[in-house]
Every structure is written in structure tokens, then in C-alpha cells.
Image (cartoon, rainbow, N blue to C red; front, top):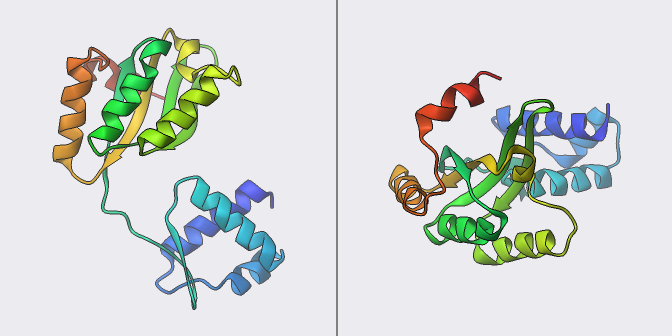
Length: 179
């Protein structure tokens, strides 16, 4: 079993367990060292899963967040404004997705929930390390945005609409869910 396969299995096991899952038991089950499990848990957390370590094992903190998919379009110069708009209103940009006509669905985890996270992301883009994923689809892209309530998501949606970033939902729902 590869590392990514093992991590997916670990997430599912912790998610479906009614009791904390001990690291020692995970190590034995997947025939790896306890240190590998600790590293796997760190990577799982970095991917956005809220895994909590207890004295009895690992548990998944059940989030009470709601989420919404937004299709947006803007220039590279407007990335900062888009991200600030979302996080300043209490949202978390979980990912970015594009549907490329040749390559199909592509997705990258972002997990941006503060201006500091946004600045780090923007600095990486501006440093020339890479370009935004949206650039391969003429600036069209999607974000899964999480927040504490539907009201917060409504405020984010309204702000994105006012700035001209948000596209009409009916235009793109079929495209996204047809994949």
C-alpha cells in the first residue's frame, strides 16, 4: 500500500470509528512504524482534516462548518482582493478547481483562512514559483468555501457578486456536476 493509499485508509478508519484509534494499532495494521503514522497524521492534518490526538488515540473533530462552491473569474491582479474578501468575511478557501477541456478536472488544496495565509499564497505566486491554476482555463475557476453558517456564505457570495468575480450558478452547475 502506498503512502497516499494508507493515509486515505487511516482517515476513513478514524472517521468511522466510534472510539479513538491508537497510533500503535494503526502502525501494526499497516505494517509501518509508529513514526510513519505520526508523519501520516501530520500530512492528513495539513490536507485540512481536523485530527485530534488524545491519550487513547486519534479522533476526527467533527466540523460544524457549511460549505458552498463558487465559480469565479478574475485577473491575476485580483487574486488578493478575492481571497481577502472571502477570509475577511469569515470564510475559508478550501481549494481551487478547474475543468480543463483537455485535461479534465484538476484540483489543488489551498486551506486559506486568514490574510496571512493569503499573503503567503500570493507571495509564492508573485515569486514566480508557479502561476494560478485558473490561468489554464482563461481565469475561470471554482472554490469550495467553508464558513460557520449559511449567513456567512451568503455575505461572501454577495461580496463576490458586487466585485464582479462571481458567475451565475445556473451557468456552471451542470458543467461541474457532469464530470
